[in-house]
Image 1 (spheres, rainbow, N blue to C red):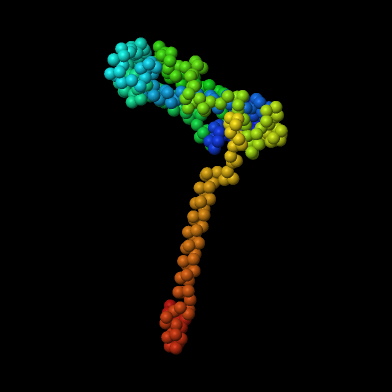
Image 2 (cartoon, rainbow, N blue to C red; image 1 turned 120 degrees about the horizontal axis):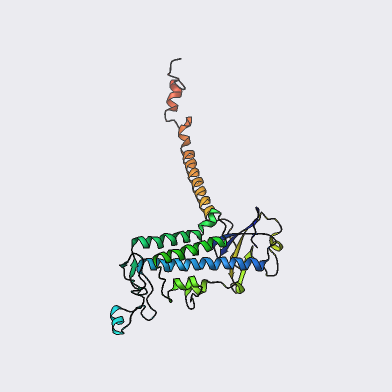
Length: 297
């Protein structure tokens, strides 16, 4: 549904209270196509997030140990006569630095500082590309942004491990599209298109209809739409004021309160300047020295 026109409907897509990304489309777009594209972008962002988490561990602690060795101590590995067949063949470019994994998942043979920087710098760029800060900056999400981030992550891993990662490594599986998420927290975050719903202004945007059936035909429209799975009921309505607006209102209210306190204090002391409050007023009245100006004319 996304076409290259100058004026388009802009959706700020959220999941719960969290902003995900901005998306542009047309009023004529079908809800089915819109949901399909939004789910695709959402799952792409989740994939990048998973890759960044694993690549950070790769940079710090090296490749993943074989499943039957993960979580075991050195003594247990020796007693069971287990061997990591990739330990000698899957060595990072430029050699490795020993940094044992406290979780016992990775082999502790980390890339050197230069190669580690390649991985960490690339994953930082990928995170920035999908950050919710992009919403604040007004950057519209596209398939090119997601695809470019994935390509850069793949390229960084190839630079550091040109021979490739072990077949069971989750990073390699993510790139191959064969990731195994069953039983993990990540599985709960993935959204299937068939169970996805899109909500706006407390209404579910029904499949089989078009966006213009809900928002009209004004292409300049900007809406906040919420993406979620079926069975969760209507999402919470948007707050009347944003968090930033609430902060500004609180600052304004505090300043007004301080001003009122100052005015009240001034009012309480203002009588001191009154004629009747002068302790010498009676004496001045009798001596006839009232309102005398001592300055020469």
